[in-house]
Image (cartoon, rainbow, N blue to C red):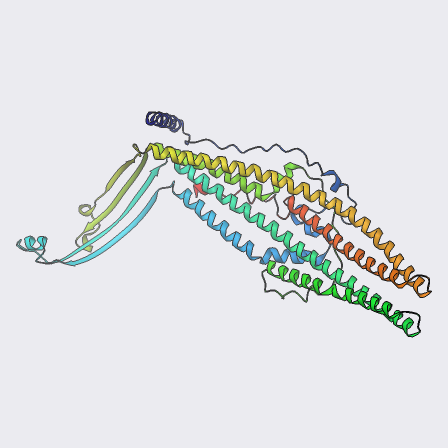
Length: 494
C-alpha cells in the first residue's frame, strides 16, 4: 500500500514539474457545468393569460402591479432592510479575503528602525570579561535602520489557485446578496398583498354585518307583529354574531402582516401602520413574459452562487496538490547598524543580506494525499449541490406557473358563484318579506354569500401572490445587465 501511495505521489510530482515547465498551475482547470434543461412544460399557460397590465421588466417586476404604494414599499424595503445590510457586510468580508489571497502572490516589503540604550551589568559573564578591557563603557547604544523584502515564488501555482478560490467565494457572496435582495422584494410585496387582502375581507365582513343587522331589524318587526317566531329572532341574532366573530381573526392577521412589513423595511413594528390603514383594493397580477430555462439559469442568484462555489472547490484541489512540490522564496535585507546615530548611514555600517529559501514536504506525501482527496470529495459534493439547485429552481418555476394559472381559473368560478349567491340572497329576502319562504332560506343565503365573497377575496390575493412567486422563481428583482456578480475586479493583480 505504501509503495502504491509513493508511486501515485511521484506521478503527481512529475506531472506538476511538467506543468510548471509549461507555465501552468497544478490541478484541474475549471470547466463550468452545462445543465441540460428542457423547456418548462407549463410556460405557455402563463404567457397566454389575459392580464390587466402588460408584463413588466424582471428587474423591477413590482412596478407591473400598477400600484404606487406597492412600488414605494418595495423600494423602501430594498433601501432599509437589515438582512440586506448584513449580506452586504458579508460580501465586503469575502472581497477582503479575496484581496488578501491575491496579495499573497506579491512581494512584501517592510521598513524598520530601532534605537536601543543599555547599561550592562558588571556581574554578567559578558560584563565581567569586557570590564577588564581599556575604554570599556557600561552604557551602550545601538541604532539600526533598514528594509526587508520577501517573495514566495509561485512556481507551481498553489497561491494562484488559492486566490482563484477566494475570488470565486467573493462572487458567490455577491450572488447570495442578490438572492437576499430578491427575497426581500418578494417578501415585502407578499406582505403588502396580504394586508390588502385582509382589509378587503374586513370590508366584506363589515358589509355583511350591516346586511345581517338590517335582516335582524326586519325579523324583530315581524316578531312584534306576530308574523315571526322567537326562534327566528334567535337564528338571525346568531347569524349577526357569526359575522361579527369573523372580524377578530382578520384583525390579528392584518396586524401581523403590518408588523412583518415594518420589520422588512427595517423599522419598529407599528411605524407604517397609519400609512397603510385604508384599504385601496387588491392589486391585479400583471402578465408574465415567456420564460426559458436559459433565462432562469442566468438570473437565479442561488444557481450562480452554487456555480461559483463549485469553481472555488475546483481551485482548492490545485492549491492542495501544490503541496506535493517545493516552495521557493526570496528574501533580502538592506540595513545599517551603528553605535551612534551620527554614523548610522555610511558604507562601514551597511549590512545587506540575501536569502534563497526552499521548503518541501518531501516525507509528508501521505498527508498531502489525504488533503487532495478531501478537496476532490468536496468538489463532488458541491457539484451535486449545484445540480440540485438547478432542479429546485426549475421546480419553483413550474409550481409557480401552475399555481398562478389554476388560481386564476378558481377566481373565475368564485366570481360566478358570488354573483349568483348575491341574487339568491336578494330574492330570498324579498320572498321572505312576502311570506313565501321560511327565514332559514334567507339565513342560508346570507351565510353562503359571505363565505363566497370571503373566498373570492382570498383567491384574488393568492393570484397576485402567485405572480410574485413566479417573478421570484424566475430570479426577478435585480439587474443582470450590470455584471455585478460575474465581473468582480480581479483582486489577484491589485
